[in-house]
Image 1 (cartoon, rainbow, N blue to C red):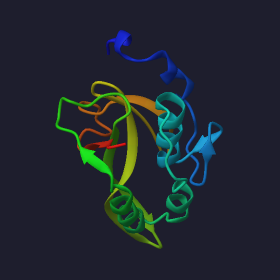
Image 2 (image 1 turned 90 degrees about the horizontal axis):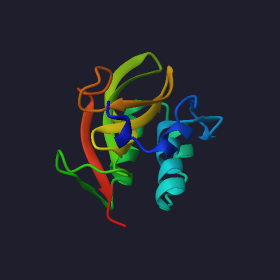
Image 3 (image 1 turned 90 degrees about the vertical axis):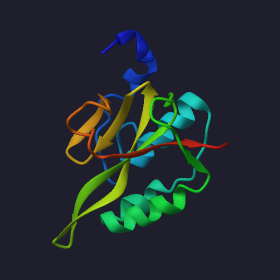
Length: 147
């Protein structure tokens, strides 16, 4: 990793623990982390839909909500990602004994090919979303908000 590419502000988010209904630095879900970074670092505000996402701990419901929230976002061509873009990933969720895969996890790009994200079982981490074994096969698309 080329440390010079990663903005220093990223360090303020590394280690934030995962919390389903969290929206603060003492614990956040993936959408809350993305919202927090986009607001604090890029001056972009988004609805507090993370509360809805957190209450929908079922991958299918989260995926449905993500489709709705993607309105106003455009797909970014591979290699043209920039800080502030959002990485949409698939995830595996178990709800009421049923395990399923859904496009229901997000992270935020901080530098070309690098993102921070948080999910169940891990605190917020910095990873190369093109090469890191935990996410590279899960990336569905990278999105940029039109506004």
